[in-house]
Amino acid sequence: MTPHVHPVQVYYEDTDHSGVVYHANYLKYFERAREHLLGVDELVRLYRQEGTGFVVYQVGVKYREGAVFGDSLEIRTTVRRASDFRAVFVQEVWRPGGARAMVEGEVHLCCVNAQQQLVRLPAAVLAMIAQRFPEAP
Image (cartoon, rainbow, N blue to C red; front, side):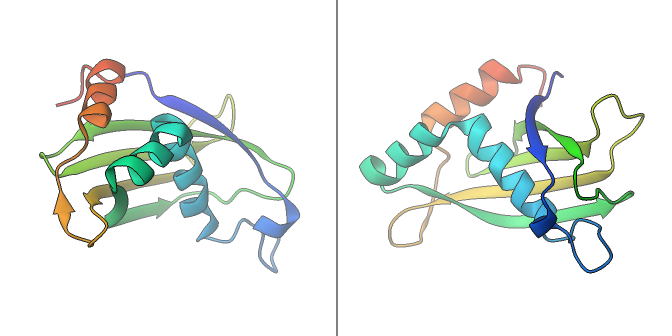
């Protein structure tokens, strides 16, 4: 399965006192990559026109190697439909040309309406998953 690749530049503000990217910032990198994969315009349309938004249901992260100020990174993302209500994004942080992922994450997203009630994943999102990741279960 070919992942979606989103470039990230590590800035000084991303790092902690030891000069390594603060652990929670990887979740921000993952979020940016998901937004670009799904499409910012589509996410805005879903929210404004359909009243549908994504919420994180579950997240798991494994940290293997820390990035530092000045690093250029790639956030590699694949996604699969886990149910009518949940999509699972498998996301990894790589240095371009690296031998293995530095950070591995799995983020489960659900959709809710304006009243924060669970709703089915939007048809446009399901179509994107099927088209972009046809090998996904």
